[in-house]
Length: 231
Length: 155
Image (cartoon, rainbow over all chains, first blue to last red; front, side):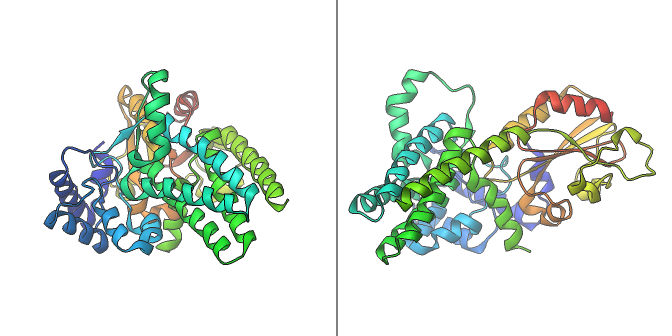
């Protein structure tokens, strides 16, 4: 567990530790969905905000920041929010079957939406899916409505999971999904149904891979994006 | 109509991709050692990795000492579901074997090493021999049997 912490022996590591501590001070009841443990100035601002004025949603300092500046959500998903050493911070652990269950529902919603484009049914379904993705993206994976449905109605029948998983990867996937659904809605708004269809199809592909193969497409793209971003 | 075509195409392509990934993930594949090295059993061609074959990684590269006999180098990132399972698996295996180390590297903070070794996904696991030469490689959660077999060949 300590190995990656030791390896991260650059100046970020100190900042990471400090920020991690601050976060647990602010919200020690809730284990973090993602402690922003990188030294980016923007994330530091977010944490500082959280400290000076206890946030309404205590477990998400950085997403609180992104909620205020709405269009930075994309940037957050792809770069600024890079809690890097996965082992260092206290993390929210979740039942891994929850996100897969949610992905299966997402597949159904997006498949119907794809068939319904450009009708009003597609708009309603895409808006609903954007709300579902957005809830997880902004407030953490526990706010995801499909996850709530899973915990309320499915999990009690299944018994405890064999193992838990970190909440950060599925939440990141929800953020990526949100971007695609918003692009699809933009395509509909501007009268370009093909854009809406293709964006919906990409989100559908990612959700399908998650549901059927437990494969997190957004998570894989993340490292590639990092490679290009800092090339 | 277009929507139906796209829907079918997406499901077919995603299924093919998923099956292919399931087939290849977690395999410990050989990394060829250049001719002239004294490890003849490792000469298995994997052309895409050929230029890294037998490349030496040092404690300075990794930031941690190498194992006396072998070292697992795991590249991880924050948004990586299988990384945790990989960490637990490798920790479990190396914990019982003296001289075999497990080094986990945060890919985001070591982009130079990531580019040099052409790590594209996390988790990527490299198996180094006693000299620090890269001998085996796996992407995705490694299969325990493959890890043990690879270790047996390298140690």
